[in-house]
Length: 426
Image (cartoon, rainbow, N blue to C red):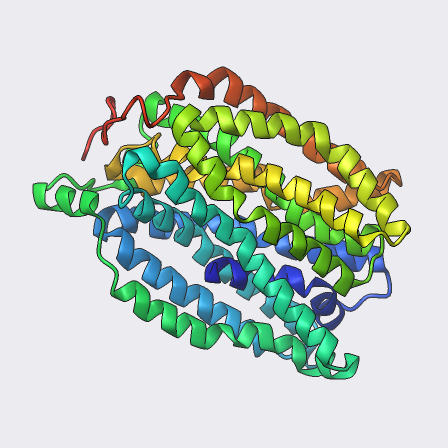
């Protein structure tokens, strides 16, 4: 949650940061620049995967995510200390972009290690439910960022918030990171890693092994298109792009938009373990496929309804429709950690997971807000962005139905061995 709080606090403060670091009289240009800065950080995430995921497979899951937490926390606090455009000119957005890239590198190395750590501590028959809790923390990180930024905006004057108040959400990361680092350092390494280390079965070159051969790439492509791609589209449309849609397209007050989105996130959070548990019983791909189909059917009318309700000031209806999308997003996202991790043997599990996740994020998620906003601007259709998201889910659904279901075995009835044929350990 802390990692995603650090990463998403930029999204919660988009309007303010755009004004302070990317000043322009053209609101459309400012919004597109802000969305582009968000997307660029995703280009850095594969670098984090290449650096940290093989380390997780070689030296341990625990050691790796202690380092990534420290890197993320340092970059976040540094953003809170940055001088603005009025102080140092063009250097301000350059430094902001640089620190966003550092955050991307940290998150690129964090998530795969965290998932594998949890997977390897979970009994297989409950793996979907247990790991799905980790998925909910991405949205909860954004919820925390929204709550703190909204509270500050309400309690401070506009001048005070623009002067120094916006820095607080970034700076509070420092003490939390310190506490979280101590907690992580006292955690135990996973039994699977310790057994491989004791037996001398650790991969000497995890990255090379993870991408060697057609069997490896089948797992990567299935995870990229079937699971991560669908998750990226649903999450970044229903949560991240939703903020841009409410604030910049429909032009709702930022605080009102934050509250409506926060309600949806909060209500949807308990559904993650519900859908994760369902994936343990009927299969990961089945749950994701059902969620994708329903999300595709609901998304366009939901966004149209949100626009109409917002124009009428019916905020309960806005929150309810956001909640529907958030719950369906949970259905798609919940099985992902177990589904992807089960595609790879333990010797390259973190590396394979990380590669698939970052490919999916780049292809489907990171630049989705920018592309969607650009389509709205080019076509004049306020719902063009969500139409793009629906179209983006088509290949994800096809891969899940045609390829994913063939490998879909309920955990409760068909246990899978920790190693897979076709993979060399070294």
